[in-house]
Image (cartoon, rainbow, N blue to C red):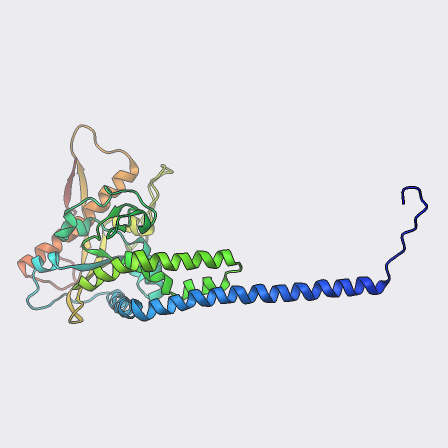
Length: 347
């Protein structure tokens, strides 16, 4: 070939035709094999999911459905009369093991909306000032975590991303985090996975939730005797404007923006064992921080957090006062002093 004395003869057209055909057949066979293996992996993960749904899900899913029905009933309508069951006392409500959830009223219209908004439900000024157990420990003092795998046995990676014992009251947000692997959205995502590596990730996610999140959530939910729900109504003028002015770390969710201004709040408490309403009322939540000390807080994020705490805590104290005095009023009309802001001292 180098000397120009060798002639390379052209391949006959039939060779290239058969070569292309062989490559095509091999590609189809390999794709079929890979797809079959991928579908087999997905089927294995789905079998685990069905087993979880038949065991743990059989107890947790009906409770979740009841809670979502409660939320939809409390969110419906514009006004309603106060409802206080016979024998209800503040001391009992404040110390009974409870499930807690706080949403905007506009997020409680359907189960899908409730599940999407529940991830932003946090312990707040209401839980601190109303419940007895909520005052025992600071949820931000534990070891930082990203998942329950980072925590000791029996601890949860709470909503503040710190390891802590299961909180009282139990935040329904943590239960939704466990139940997400049983949701249709999670199943759809699994079906759409296009590689073995992606399916392995879903398999490990299911195993982690089954071994770490679900046992603790199931144990706490089994102890809970009542469900406490707060629904924040948007102010008449809509969501308050953000006042963070680009401050780093001062971002606010829509729920937080509503909670730091005067607005009406709907409170519902249900007895989970008897499936009956213990308390339903609607009041205007309002409060303000009165700075004290030589160095008042100036950081926007801290000011907003303090204002949310003041509004929520004053609402809790008003509910406590109402139950203690046993003088429920018509929820359709605002109490004479409901519009007057309360004061809270800030160190």
